[in-house]
Amino acid sequence: MDRRIRKVVHILPKMIFKTYPNISKTTIYDDRKIKRDRKLLEDVAEAVNLSPLHLCRLFRVEMNMTFKQYADNLIMEKAIEMANNGYLTISQIVDEIGAGDERNFRRRLKKNHGLTLSQFRKICDKQAE
Image 1 (spheres, rainbow, N blue to C red):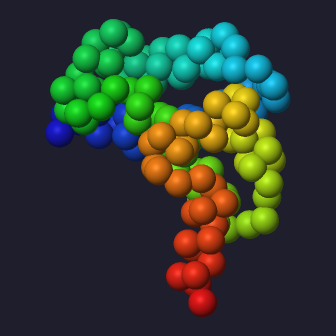
Image 2 (cartoon, rainbow, N blue to C red):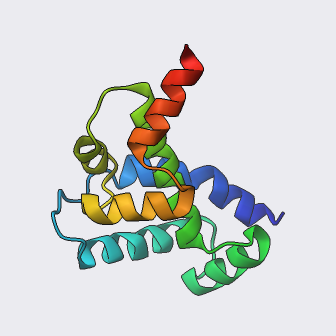
């Protein structure tokens, strides 16, 4: 794996959850999320001394997924972790991770992982017993 991509994989979770927490508590999935994604890409590209376009191309070749898909997966994994480690509602989790509107988040989670957050919680509760 390219050293720059290794660096991206290392710093991206920190940048998502430290620099960009709770951009806005939106009820509409609007252009603020798109601007946040673009700003995140630009900041990561700058951190590894690449243009955003070159980073996207290199990332796709090295990781077999797009930069946005990878970032979304990190956000989904964080949401699942939060659901399993506490008793936050889905609305609270969506607000906490800054994922946009709850309906869209639920749809993306179900599409990407095949389960809802409440189903993940039930599985974890059964495993804990």
